[in-house]
Length: 143
Image 1: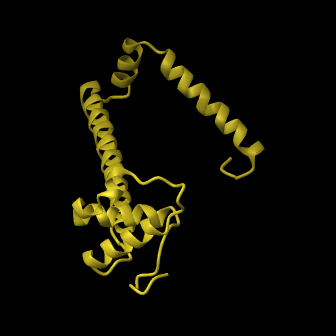
Image 2: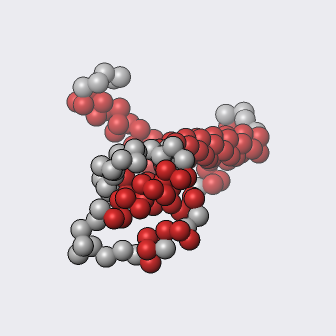
């Protein structure tokens, strides 16, 4: 019954479905009576099930947090590595990229006021341009 063949699993699946339907159709009183008839303490069983449920939720949330942190770390590693050696070089490269644009491509106000941009903004603009495939070599002899 535990084979990987779909036909072999069908009877087991029907049994599982029947058991689940039976449990869901039972009233609270019937469940408590079966629990007591089996010699178990319904309150202890309920507490154990609640603890198991809470632990499952906690583990699931921890796993989601771990995956989110890993994703954020990966995104930071990709986005924080500019191909520029320093801020002076970055500003020079930004000026050359902007100067090499076609005449019919307008500049934003921020790009026109490059001297007023923070170093972080300049690096961010260069990174955005590189992500768009717009780059120049790092050397200052042109490109």
